[in-house]
Length: 156
Image 1 (cartoon, rainbow, N blue to C red):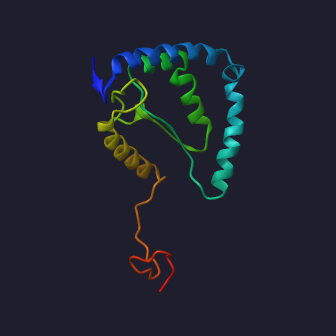
Image 2: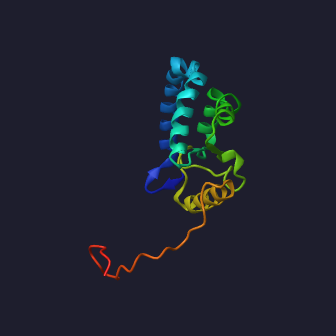
């Protein structure tokens, strides 16, 4: 048993896995999953609307591990879903398997990072987003003379 914040994580993982496994069958039977490529046009229209207003859109596939990761890959293979989506969108896409420093992170119950790994994931993600041109280096701007301790933020 692995103790994590007073929870039997092994038992919790087993229960969650069974729930997810049952739900996967439901997802696969949905018409929208069978027809999901046709929905990409709707998603792309929303992406382009955001981009037209100067925004940047990033789709991120966060880390998973263990039985949950295997289940997802069995039912929704990356090559048939993520890779198709990534090739057809003008948005930035980033899959955790393409992030060498995080691809093998273990998740508490298969879907959530351990708190000890969150800092590393965040740092790697931020660096990759900078490399992709999504994030720009921080610039400190003049605040216009707001005095420290001012409650209303008015210039003095």
